[in-house]
Image 1 (cartoon, rainbow, N blue to C red):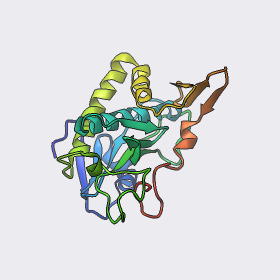
Image 2: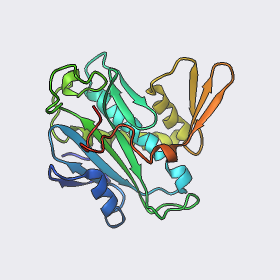
Image 3: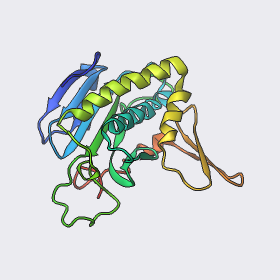
Image 4: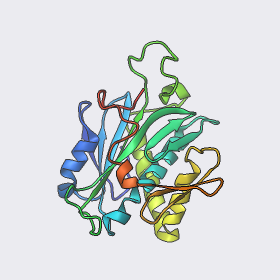
Amino acid sequence: MDLPPPFRLLTLREVGDAFAHACAVASQEGAGTLVHVGRFDLAELAVVLEPDEPLALARRSFYAGMVALGDALVARAPPERPIAFVWPDAIHVDGGLVGGARLAWPSSADEAEVPDWLVFSAMVRVVAMGEGEAGLHPLSTALEDEGFADLDTGWLAEGFARHLMATLDIWQSDGFEAVAQSYLQRLKPQKGATYNIDANADLLVNWRGGHSERHSLAQALGQASWLDPESGGPRR
């Protein structure tokens, strides 16, 4: 696998859990460690980050990870196959759920202090395995079913790593607002709503007529909306 610096690859066998493993080794392996699980039906990765700002602000890196993930998928997507986010963590291709992302930090971390590490993890369904008749799960899909081609084992990790470096460069040069806008451009719209992301990473929703809402990213990340706890993969 061809990863740009400063990434270092750790590959797990098919039964591995990239998210759990990255969290377990984050403090020893350090920033840039990219854990990849070698399986063909799911593309699964996790990367260790070392932020330089308090946890309350450092969570904004979740949006950078989502932007990089979306860009990596767009690079392989057939024409006219829209990639959309459902806030904060789910990824849809042409309206069907394919996977999503998670963010972890040390359980002892204080909101006002810089955490020792963060782990951004992503999982995307590449091939639908054992799903029965076609059309049985109309709200979900797999990349193969959407016409994605050349989906070898490491394609997502490679693309994600390169796009994450580009996204972080944009953050450094143009500020977080540029990253937030890239994320919001792919956010699945609701009629009558406009969106913004606050400085502390919360989603602000302004409804036509003057009503507004605040949605806490920290709270939303407590349970992945797209993950099936029984199968360990994306929901069907």
